Length: 180
Image (cartoon, rainbow, N blue to C red; front, side, top):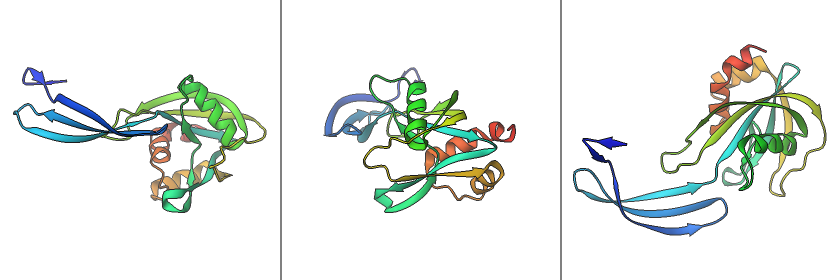
């Protein structure tokens, strides 16, 4: 992106401060278009998917434990995309792992969840066809919960959901939900 004929921010240096499989933290030294020098902390976060599963007129959620908040939250199935995986394959895998359900997924959109990272959140909706057994990660404490579409929409509009990918997905998929 250009502003006034030049690149907006020029990178003088970039230093990785922390690294794990989920996140990397960088401190960048930058020059702004007016010549001012700044430091900017930037994140590398892995891409993920969120799935809106619909089964017999109900939305399939997971009641999910979130360690930082030490609480459970009602969320749509969601997960990190593995290195050798497409977003669509991840959507199928996460739907099956977290809910035990299988279904036909349809791509909706992608978005940047943070202004400090290029991480992408991919959104799919799924018509659930069959059920099976969950195969959650050892740190996933979840319970499947199905809510009628009308109830899920009222909860969304009433601000009851707190998980950002769930909020974005429900917001972008309202037309899908109302068409069921």
